[in-house]
Length: 170
Image (cartoon, rainbow, N blue to C red):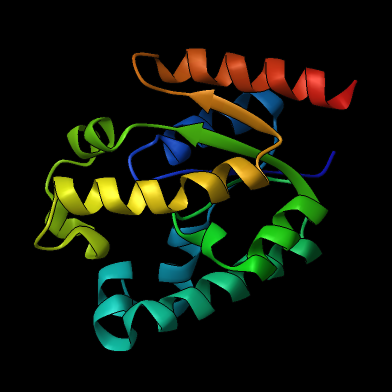
């Protein structure tokens, strides 16, 4: 088995679902943002403040491609990983991509205080909707499997991902 990448907007549940999926499949779990923070010694917010989004995206890309040398894992990707053509090609080439779908309104309800999300700072609902709308086609294009999370428990989402993986492997 290869990596399983979970992509989608902030608040979609990629980390929560990823941990459950990893446990069910008895695979390691990697949260890409957590790895970036651990390696840089700074939070995502601090990286954005110091280097802007471009600086963060370089770190994100480097961490993503480093996974090619590792054993297959369930990987929760940051919401913007799909913005790079190179990242999208890497995801498709090295694993199964699951689009964990959420609406902007549901995402905001889940993440709560938008001050902890650098791209939402000062704008909340309007910015979330605009960002999600801009990324939607990219999430869909890279996905092998799409699972809508709205109104579903994390366990139900995992069940749907597993069902989708069975269909993809047939």
